[in-house]
Length: 289
Image (cartoon, rainbow, N blue to C red):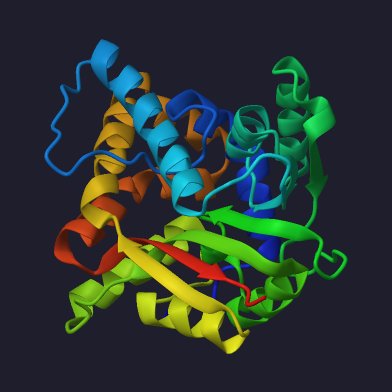
């Protein structure tokens, strides 16, 4: 695990309060990577990549729903729900009752409005809560779902311990996460991961082995790991082009220096994926009956 001790919780919250609009403009209603076929190489002309990235983001959500076998009427907790994109889609498509939690009050407000707009207000609720201090009743959920949130947690093992208690027997957990990769045998690779942690406000990045261990240590039955690094890295090629085309970095300079650093590290995370310093993984586990 690679750690960045300078990251602070209030900075993470401030980042998402300030950058929610940036995320929406640069990337869309889902705040997560897109999932492409490994052989795809779509044009990055504006009219094409806008459509392609939206499809790829939806593909990631739909692939997770299929892998974890979402069923109609299930109770689902979306940890790090962002602007509610996945929560609202799952509620609408599968008839789930979805609770989404986010550290950002701005994102909570945005997700709530979006759920009203999309007719899913009765099937969703969004809470401004820290995933590390949130409390839910034991065995309250059939599925715990988290896409690119656990990177921001300071005590990941403690979170998995609590989250497992919220699952009903037979319930499933699906996590997508940025990971410290296998190619960390030199200082440059370690520095790449550290720079990503610093720029994207992650206290640490665990490895695939760490995540499997954290899940198994809580009593979950580990079922699958999918390394999707090559299928998501195009995300950052597209984000870089959008920053260049929109001039959003200039706007960020007027708002917050941390946001400028965040935008400048897009190239770093892309390079980390390419060199193997980082991976992108999907983890699936089940609570025994």
